[in-house]
Amino acid sequence: MPPLPPITQALILINVAVFCLDQFLGMWFTRLFALWPLGGGFMPWQVASYAFLHGGIGHLFFNMLGLWMFGAELERLWGTKRFVQFYGASVLAAAVAQLLVAWLLNSPYPTVGASGGLFGLLLAFGMLFPNRTIMPLFPPIPMKARTFVMVFGGLELLLGFISPTGGVAHFAHLGGMAGGWLMIRYWRGQTPFGRR
Image (tube, rainbow, N blue to C red; front, side, top):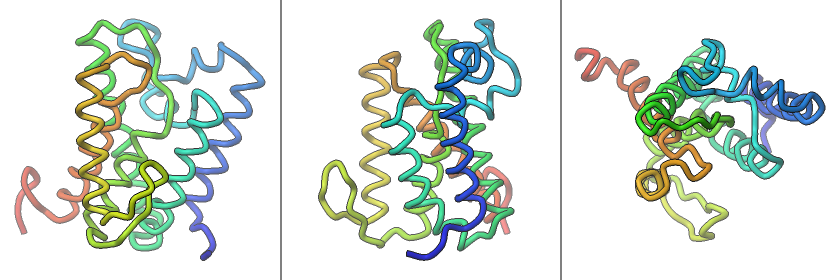
């Protein structure tokens, strides 16, 4: 295994440290740093801070596994500056999507987790390495990266409509993918950002 690049390593360590801090400090910490709906405790810093909180050890584990699997290789390819820009754009787009859905559904619940940023990384991996074969944990069937991205994106869309307030922020995941897609198009000078 190659060593983890610095930003991916830092993100994993910060997420684990914040999870431990959250377990120790309790509900007021979540109240301050989770992404709350507009008018329901929302503060501007929450569009970034929510991505470092997690709802449980399983939530943390699978997000950090995905960050290691997809983020490390993308950071090695892009370098630290572009990786930070991309991950940040995915996290922010996921927050905007979740705020919009929470407002439309009048949902009072907060959002936590790095999943929006992770889904952006997943999309980028599928776009940059479309023919790379990967083996997901669920289902354990080898598939090309682009197929994996399409399957997970389609499932998130379907589950978002079936259970929009079921405890998983499906539209935040899709928002992270959209933010990542827009960032790649921006770097390439493609529509809606002009053409090169």
